[in-house]
Image 1: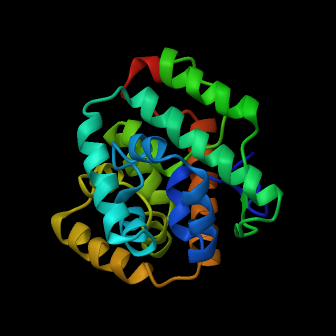
Image 2: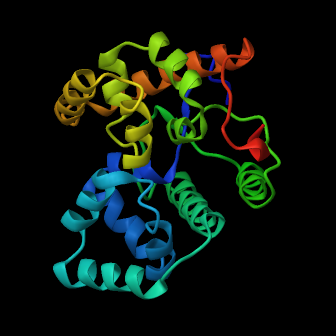
Image 3: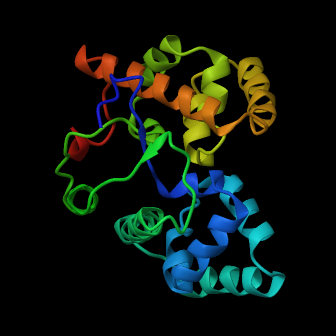
Length: 227
């Protein structure tokens, strides 16, 4: 998917489960085995929003069992966590194809080949051509993050950060003044009430800005494997 096409759709990611309706989530949670879900949640990439969604849509007993399973699993390579996240995305894709779940029209799904390439990237560092994702901001050096923040206004940025991990938020906050970071945290809280359509539109703007900067060689990754 090309981020330069603002009329295009956003590739669905694991953390976007938080945007789905309760009925769809019930169907998905029944289709996904508990261990896969526990592994996918290990690194908290999906942030607090998805944890809150799980708490609301699982029984207290099921939610407690999931937390215990996450604890029992222990440490895992990031590549294994990402593999399970993409496995769940593939399940959502198949359910959506059968109209068993409702996914906002702003999103499209990666193909099996896309998922295999992404997993290969996590294991080997061989980077495929793909559109920028919100979590990629954690891989940028500070100068690149500052370039990106200059290209997107605060209102759009706050919406982009609604479903971002704490690590992604901290990458943004450390490149702001203390006062601006505090104000952004408040704006993010308010942005939780925004419709999915508005959040998706802001994510498209972020993707467009990031790929524009990358085309001008103004985005640089901190890990040499990722270049």
